[in-house]
Length: 247
Length: 56
Length: 164
Image (cartoon, rainbow over all chains, first blue to last red; front, side, top):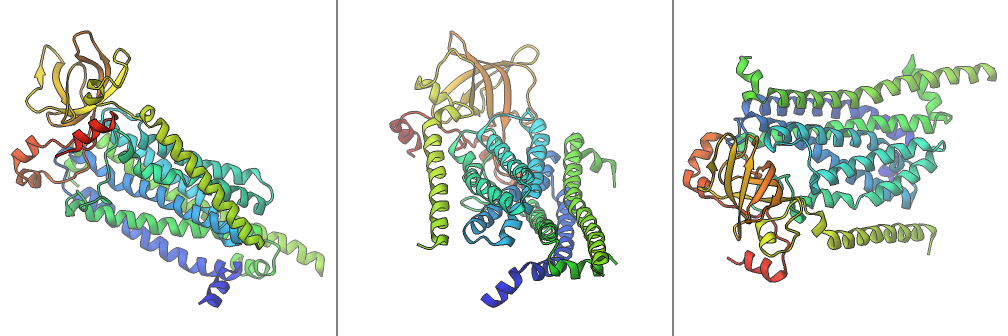
């Protein structure tokens, strides 16, 4: 088990492993997203209060879910990178930030498009919206910090530190609707007593969220491959790999 | 599709941009690293070609 | 200690420190970080009454009255205290009796909250109309769920509010 893990964690075998896995994750992810969107737009009934506007949930909730999951994964990788100095963990941190930032921005933008017709405002400074905006700035901070360093290893270590410290914001985002009065409603799926959404509306949501997660994994693997290529461009395995692929 | 579907009960101007943004973010996430990887592999190939030339 | 153990300790101390500082700040400033107050907060004289503020609660069923044009009056409740609200303007699609709302405005001399903007706060349930009809209409109409409207107040009041 450990031997297998060590072999996988070496950059050349991880590069090959990611190259095989990423297209599969992409295909599974896009299929699930297509099914979830179809279910959400066509098959699911309109909501008794919100009508068809509630269908924005099938983009908004998967994006918001990924913004938190992606940050949690990045923070765990940051811890591993800081303590064990594992190159792959550093690559996870650097690769997660731009993808996570894009899904956080998507969650905020679709939330605004949902808020205008239902609440009556695109934006309010309540605890949920504000803490999610802070999450976006944390992601962007990691991206900016990484590009400010010319040495990739020093940059990754600085990024890991910022990512880890910023992790305190993750529970704040999740529990903001419990701890404070907010315009944003409370949890629907993960709440005591089970989901308060009818099954015909729930399955497309879970399918889309699963699809987004698989897609995200594929994207992070691709970005990690790029990071490894840049860092190890002078190593033997990259030299052996490149003419074959580029030919 | 019937026109009622595209109207989204009067919320079309909010629902469709939300889905368009979603698809745009998905496309950006996959296409940008993919293009970057192609460019990297091409550049690395050229670099290695040069160093091989010097070596022989 | 090995170098790795020292690094682990440093990282753990750093994260624990930041988390503790954040928790303290959040606890200390929770009152100032509330997006809106509730009628109970106003009743407890817990907030400055002349200033512009946000007030949240449910539109008490049976109290919505239309005046001329877009003018409306209704009672806002948090299941503990009520506050009369007056408003003249455009309402969001979700506004109706029994709905959670957040009003921006100020208290006038006779104790009415004069709103300059009203936002709707929807709950976290989603269901198709036919299911909503099956869930007894009366139950939906008379339903008052004030869990989303948290009162700052003192501990005694919170306890009284939460008591069955």
